[in-house]
Image (tube, rainbow, N blue to C red; front, side, top):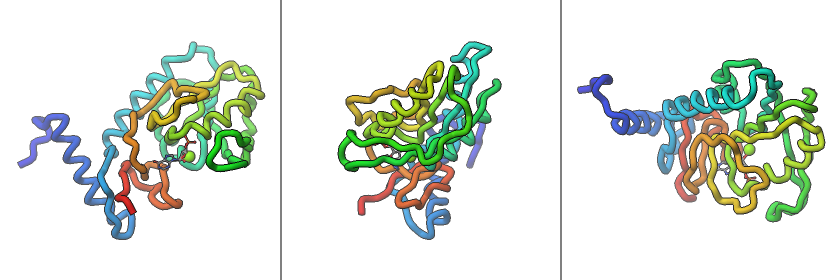
Length: 204
Ligand code: IMP
Ligand code: MG
């Protein structure tokens, strides 16, 4: 017997995650997750709260430019912008790292350079997940050159692995477990980006 009105929050969360687990093979051609980490409903509630926080953070006359870091942020930023109830502009960054993949000494090059002017504007870099922090560390200098009024980072997930983050994100959706996560924009070899929930994969 189901009675939505008397469900406790943990009961509802468990049911949403079970539903997502049942959908996983349909989305993935028969594969199974290790576990569902965040359901569609949990993500939506968190994204709504983050949108309200971002809207309230800046003075009323601030010119705000959200910059989604592709590809991973495409789902998140699509939902997030619809939860920011004030004037904003949206553009994207496509970054490629050069040099050794295992060190942070390399350069980041912008493959797509946003046409939006950045000088004197408040930038919000929207990232899917902060893991080592390499991507953000490298991006910092490239964006500061454009002389924006401020730069903040909004990350849906933060693994808290990095010890020397050039920027700590001002807004974090979830403190994520140190598992390999897929869905809601996050991929494994380009698979799984289209899942409406976030799951972790079984060890190979
Ligand atoms: P970082 O530069 O090490 O912080 O890693 C950031 C980027 O690595 C993210 O934007 C993702 O594209 C990717 N990444 C890191 N951890 C995961 C994960 O658990 N699943 C999928 N992609 C990840
Ligand atoms: Mg990414």
